[in-house]
Length: 307
Image (cartoon, rainbow, N blue to C red):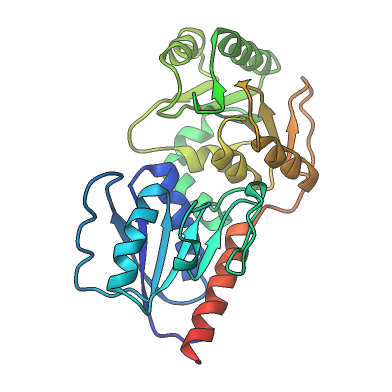
């Protein structure tokens, strides 16, 4: 394996859920070979900026903005190894490797499918992210449940019935003397945020994080005994499954479509179960699909360097 440091562009529109997939793969690759990581944010509409004078050896993109940028960047860096995460929907031959979720059922000579989505979750990263919050976390009793709440999407909606169900489930956990580590997303409806505040803001056994820095997300995953995830977020379901901890899927209104396949795959893997009111504990091997994909990228890089 070459120890020469390679430059890696991490290309996205800058949204956290999109960028973290590309960043997670880049970080996993950097565990295998020296990399200089360079985030590159590109607009979703309008002209793509000139990529500048630095020529990367590796280009990892995620999201529609990265697909747009890939045409410009491929012309600028013809020898670069270009990797796209998710389904690009077009111009697949432009990429050396496409890494879609397995539930997309995408095939092709340059396709390497993974279970779920690429992510940044590793034991060392969780420990590092938890360290700044250690003193506050120590003030919460055990057991603890992390609760990861998403929001409205094309396939899911958080209506009044869903909001009521979620509040009731969380109240049930508190009645079982489970401390709650709750985080919401930018997509979470205001009505649900208001209901969470009204019910739990004065409860010393609940840590409710809404927005802003520092973000205790990794600390929540690290400190939890169970992880509850609303089913609208495929990223958070996959990140939770990367911890090796019991993961419960919370239903949301709507038609999940192809995501039903993801739920079934994660359940078959042994990571995720629907929540039926029982706080079961079980073990499984933490999902490490990002590392597996990084190994494939390294194989392509090494093959190019020896050709």
